[in-house]
Length: 364
Image (cartoon, rainbow, N blue to C red; front, side):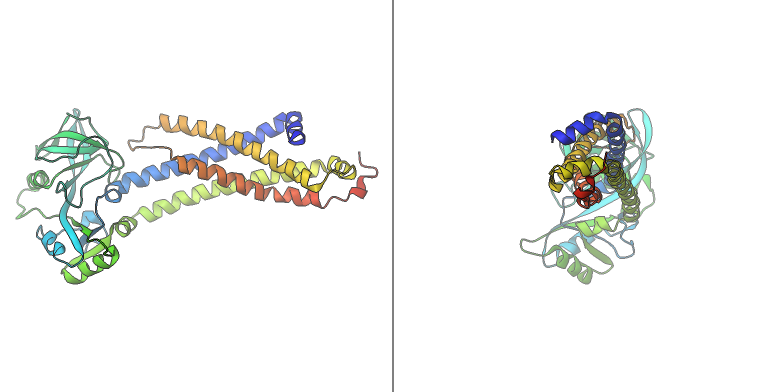
């Protein structure tokens, strides 16, 4: 430790520049990962947080709840399938609304209170139970009134949700009765208001995937999914996740390469001092430990700087979607950078191990 620390003190500028470079790379990894999670959550949070074991769409919907149209009686047909404990209709559509005096596009979900298909992620207040009540994610405060355009339906906010948005829009959850009234007023002339999906819970001991397949087989014109499968199949999510994954991966690899080559170059520059140390009996293990300790110090200091920068960036973002730092992401990223940096440092350690103490003759 003394050897590693004394070298860092003698070369403050060199190690300071490396620490700054690593800090920026770790910052980019944390920020990109956080933004990726926030964006995906804002796109699929409504389905991801649905209180249900599975969901049913029309078989022509191509795995998209917005494209699905089902007869309201479909919930009864699904509930009659063996293995289904309960089932209820879920509806959704996009419309305009007046929120705090401003017009905005919103996503509306209708659900049956106390039945499968209710939202999760309640942060304050309560879920709506009566007509005219709404819980929201991304707009307003408890007690505010939201007016839907052009329906003119007025909804009173009784609860605030987090992580329950859909299509990155402010998302409103209201009882199915109110949803039907708003949908009928927004689309006059409909013979009936269709529902988009049927959420279901499975009986104790039943397999959700098997029950979803049984629903597909038993009820004409529908396709059943487990909730996880439905979320994974949302159109566009896979490409967004892959795009961000490539960016994060490239940034991570660049950071590891920078650390590995820095210490390799540093080792080459110090071959004569290392040779002299080997000649006076310093073991390869101690010299290798010096490199490992320096890598650890650089990564830890750089990670602390990166975390501070990420916190400032997240607080300064005004994206309209909730952005939070995940402690698991922070810890996982720092540990991964440290481990792979040590692996990259093996290049330096290998070079040290090849030093011949006998070559110390004439080394200065």
